[in-house]
Length: 210
Image (cartoon, rainbow, N blue to C red; front, side, top):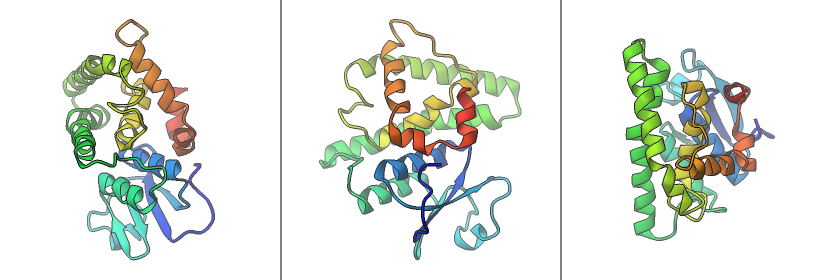
């Protein structure tokens, strides 16, 4: 993975397949941050993680004495600690709007992704797959207006969108080219072709689109 480098004061415990770990890896790569990356399986986390994180969960970011175990907090912390390039708008209103977009992505889409991946009920998976596809297609036209998600610049919102869109084939969702989907597909291509995104991918994530 591209963000792995020499010994650092910062350690990132990352799940190789989780959308929440992936979004943080994108931010790390976008910022060019040097981290010690510990790849782990959420069902068998490293023994040392229990001493750091009260939930023993992934992802977990450790920066000296600071331990973070919520992906949104990690992303904002990294954006503030490493301010270039900025991944949140400068003005309070725009920053609040970006945070609200991230909240909606988590509430409306991330939960559906988790249901598709982890539910044992075929009916739940089928319903979640249908809802996710329809919801994503419903916003496809907005990408004709701006190059990124409601923004002229790449932001943390895009860092949350990219892992979901990358996983669509693995989730059984095929977005075929049409007049409606064309702006969305162009947006996806622009995300996936970013150097930071390519650097963020694990081997398991690359296999999701083979």
